[in-house]
Image 1 (cartoon, rainbow, N blue to C red):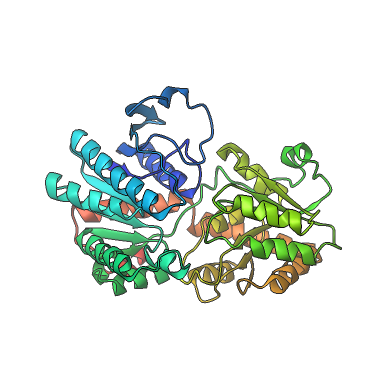
Image 2: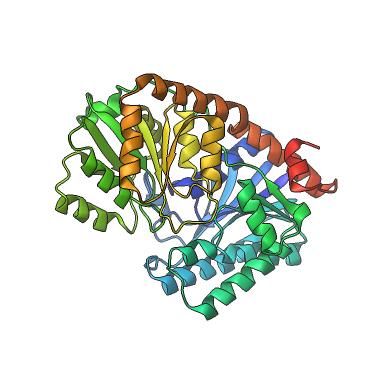
Length: 419
């Protein structure tokens, strides 16, 4: 089957947004499907050589059997809301134009948000009569409303109107948790077309391995007890609570490692310096091939979100930590879907958000109990192998594709159970 994937990010861009569709596309390609990807010229925390992209308005290349069409987008300061909106809408128009130029496809998958890409999928559906599957990863605009980044009631109304329109127009909507499914339904999507397919992890790429590795030796951390956070340092991720918990554990042999880049990094580095933290180290975003070694070097993997993040997100780093056989400690809203996953898998500890004492306490509990760390690591690895592997989730997407192209969809819960 001919499958079109539309995503604002794709390797060599780094981060979960680029790699989720890369992994899905490659897995579907390996199953014999013809995959076409429309994306931008690499620009987001890029790793690797970029000479072939310089000065190009568009470029077509083969990436592991996938036909990838990249188009240039204006480079604007994304920390500014207006500039980010212009970037997103220009991308939506550019991707629509590219989509009309590629050979006719059987189905389109859209990574959402950015919100304007939902309009791209709708326009392609109308103009080319291609069914659209909207892969919802973030509940926009609610996510930025909760953080206080969007306050203007008129703009909020515009975004929410657009959100409802996009949900209604998609043929199928996939979400990664039941809480997200209920949210999307409450925003006007039909119950029968919202399907839960959890985000996956490549269990061949990330496997358990020895903690004393080259990454530790390279950074002089061979003997350290490492608690790591690896990911984007943005407005949602509460790194402040990590710094505060690190201050509370200064007397212990615990080293806090923060790996990543983002709009908050400079402020956080300055704060760590002002706090005179000797047990915290910042590293830049690492190439994808080094990511497993960071997890292997870690004794505990961290997931932190501010209390204002009330949408039921399941950060993808949770599955990666589980796949590496390391325990998870999560500081986030206890009413969301992430704590439910961690509890069901028995792979870690959850504490209330923005509570450095609770976070430090959870770390100290695992620091003092190596047997519990090993048990939680084993539980997490077993859970992802059985339920969250790339292979298992690809099979669900293949079944979904068949249903969209032929059979009538049942309810989201029936589909997930295979009925």
